[in-house]
Length: 292
Picture 1: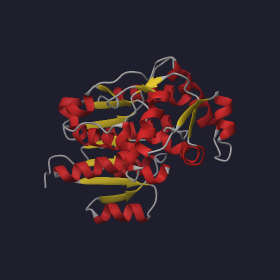
Picture 2 (picture 1 turned 90 degrees about the vertical axis):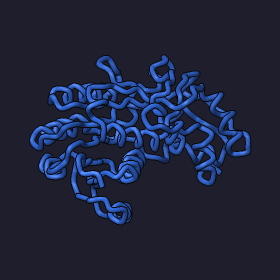
Picture 3 (picture 1 turned 30 degrees about the vertical axis):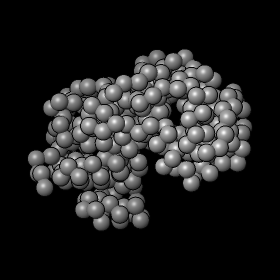
């Protein structure tokens, strides 16, 4: 096992964190995972040979303890939960205290000073906080994940409808597992990636009408796109409680999507990982049982 770099993965039981861990282990690097609580998922990590520690993003002592003996660390704070600025500030302070050599930060494509989404603007401010540490930091800015479709899977199952407030907005859906592999590569080659902002996209850009055609082919039945207003979207999904933070974020990223902020594609994922990124068809075939 390689010993020159030990990596801390937060969000370790999530999809990108889990994929990062699997890739790091495959590459032969030691991994420590910070999890919020002990459960079956944390036990599965331990069974793989991962060192698991308990910690809370909003507890500075927890984060600092998790970083002891660590070289590079992955910060992945859930975008739909408030608190990213406090968590990032604590992460930055703990990284300085422990002399980290590099940080990989999961941001988002809409992160910018003028963003109307509080979460998107907070991610941009968080990037500045991490940059101010002087520790080489990689900022990952992915477009919408294909996993977003899981949020509306009931409507796809029951009504064969994709109901989203994104109008004719375009994006290239990116898979969280591909992002995890990017994390692993960046965490173990910080000399090459430190200081970079990486905009990450899936392999093909669509509007949702075009996505509906692809999804129909993957699921073997007709699925139609029904564009709605943001108010209609939350009314239709009223059975799923939504926080003010979530509503404010989705409202403004929907506007960003319509205005082209999420559009584009590139080949960075393939260049960095050596593997072609997951297609939208791949994602729906892999999750066919969930959507059918």
